[in-house]
Amino acid sequence: MTRIEADGLRVRLGGAEVLTGVSVAAAGGEVVGLIGPNGSGKTTLLGALAGLTVPEAGHVRVDGAAIAALTPTERARRIGYLEQNPVAHWPLAVERVAMLGRTPHRAAFQGETDGDRRIVARALERCGVAGFATRAVNTLSGGERARVMLARALAGEPRILLADEPVAGLDPYHQLQVMELLRDLSREGMAVVVVLHDLSLAVRFCDRLCLLEHGRVAASGEPSAVLDGGTAERVFAVDLRRGDGWAIPWQRRGAAP
Image 1 (spheres, rainbow, N blue to C red):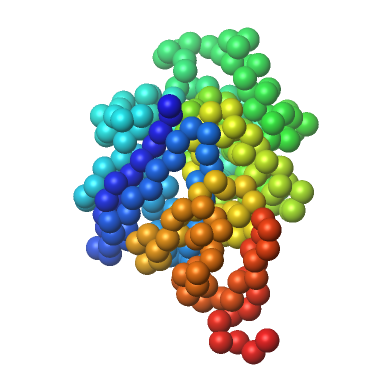
Image 2 (cartoon, rainbow, N blue to C red):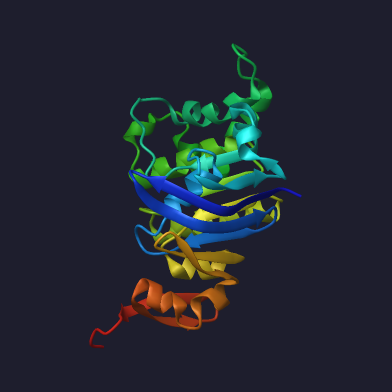
C-alpha cells in the first residue's frame, strides 16, 4: 500500500529550529490534515515530506524507501506537490501548464502522446478548469490559477499528493469542490496530506489531523479527538464550537462574548 511517513524530523531554517521531533504518516486511502497557527511549521513539514527540505535529523520514507534515495524523476512520479499561493509568470495556455505535470513520465525530448493529452484533459475536468484550457493562465483569478496548478499536479498521476492550503482564496463552492476531489482521490487509493486553516473543512474531509504548535506535534488522531479536550483551543487561542462534522472558531480566548 502507498505510504509516506516522517519520523522524528528536526529542521532548522535561517538558524531557527522550525520542526522538532515531528512524526506523521499518511497511507493510500486517507486524507491527513495538517493544522495549526501561522508559523507552526506546516509548510516546512510539507516541504520535508516532498523532499524539498532536508532535515537535520529524522527521516522521510516513501513506500519504505528513504526519500533521499529516490532520484528526482522517481520522486516526481510518486509525489505530487502543490505549493502555497502558486504563481504563474508566463502567459502559457492552461492546458500547457497542466501538461507540465506529465514531464516525469516522458523521456528526454519525447513529445506528448495521445495518452498524455487524455490524462491532462481528465485532470482539468476534475479540477473544474476544462473551460479555461486555451486561456493564458496569467489571465485567470488567483483561485482559478490554484485549481490549474492542482490539475498540473494530478496530471502527473502521483500516488501521494501534498497540498499546501489548496482552498485558500477560493469561494465556498470551489472550496467544497476541491475538498471533495481530494477525498475522492484518497478513495481511489491516493495518500493525501493537506494543509488547512478552515477547521470545518478539516473535520468534514480529513480522516486524521496533525495539530502543530511551535514546530512540535501537539495532538494527532481522528478530527473529533484532536479538536476536543481543550488542546486545539489552547493552541489556536480561541474558543471552538463543535457539532456533527463541523468546528468553527467562535471567539478569541478571553474576549468578551
